[in-house]
Length: 253
Image (tube, rainbow, N blue to C red; front, side, top):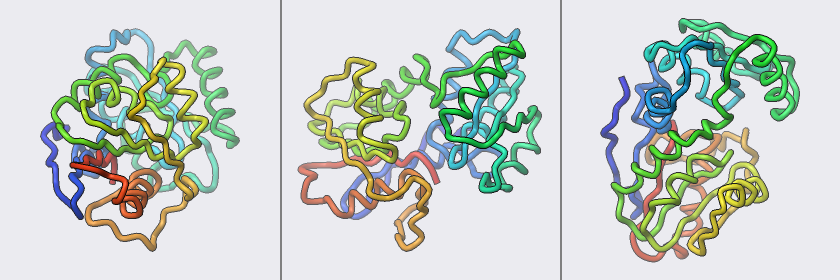
């Protein structure tokens, strides 16, 4: 179901891990986090006696991914989402096609909706995987994954940011460029939480709003407009800062 053997392609002198090809975009989302999420379900010691509820926000594939992978591994899944006018109807249709229960939430700021979902979970005897899949088994998968790649520079999106935490642990190159699609403070707070003090890390905040799909920017491979397209824009405008070989881990299409 998951494509575990995604290719590395060279585009404009940068090597690109096509993580988006982990999923086919039909049954599974075109998302490079699928194998790490599956590792949480298989090796994360999450009990099967309580349903899992996951918050899926606009611009995220988390509900779709867990809605497919959870039942495959014997979990009952509920997906909460903000019942807002701008929440994609196509995503609701996709979620409705899965063997899961949907839990609409009153629209609000993401932190508020997350709080509502946690309250709903407590009141209904459900369990939650931490937001952004901030689970040790998720981080462990990324720490092993990045060992495959021997490059001087690592360039990756930093949103929540969780995925990059595992990468940082075992990347052996000289420089790590985190392109923040949230805020620099959000990224710094997460690094501090895990006591990551690494002089190789540079944080670059994207000047574009998370929901700006940057339709004017063409990319040489499918790029998710909310996250990875912003990283590719940074790469195109900062090639002079990349000494040696560079790896961009494209997380989604």
